[in-house]
Amino acid sequence: MRIGYLQHASHVGPAAIADWAETRGFTLSGCHLYRGERPPEPGAADALVVLGGPMGVHDEAAHPWLLAEKALLRRWIDAGKPVLGTCLGAQLIAQVLGAEVGPNRQPEIGWWPIRLQPGTPLAALLPVELEAFHWHRDTFGLPPGALPLATSAACANQGFVWGGRVLGLQPHLEMDMPTARAIIAHGGHTASVAPYVQSAAEILARPQRFTALRRRIYTVLDWWAAGT
Image 1: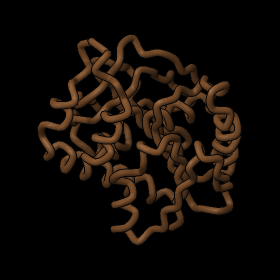
Image 2: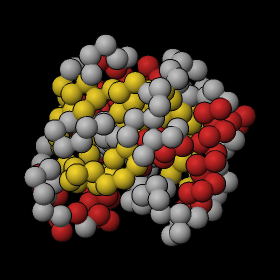
Image 3: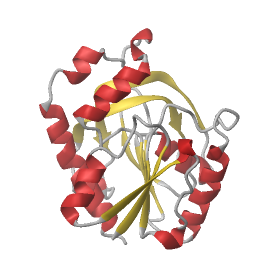
Image 4: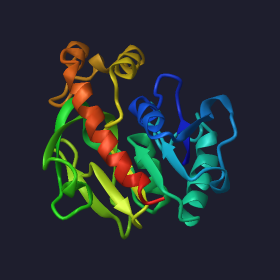
């Protein structure tokens, strides 16, 4: 299986997604959009992953490649290929599918539980409630025809599946310790004082959280890849 991924910033890479692809014997090829690299068209890979990043979906003036990326995502979706987005990636997909994207009522940064909606595909594979890693200030509405997957105390929409092959995840289930350290170094999040913002020390205090999260994203990715 050939999987392409779109990266929006040097410090927000595929993390555990890369490890999963290697263990499954899949080919994973990245496109660094912020460097001006050419992204893969639907015929060049079997599936596409859209990673997170510090910008927002409306920041085309500062990041003009966002416009081309959205058009590309539309082509992938129209081609019926599996597409998975995490955090910013999920917000971009949601917008392309017709949903509103804008500021959440408060930032959500660190380790906070999400609760899966009963009767959804992931609810049959994961615990009803699980601890997830978050780093976002924006949120998405549900695209028309999408099935909501999860919610949290800070953010109503934590995921959706659309058309059976398009998956959006607001939390970073792919997060590992090196990537978390890199995001903290770039993030300046300690300037935010809010109920759902943890300090860098709190985020990194328990490495076993990343181990548990790896099991969760492997389960999600196996389910997603099975649709190819």
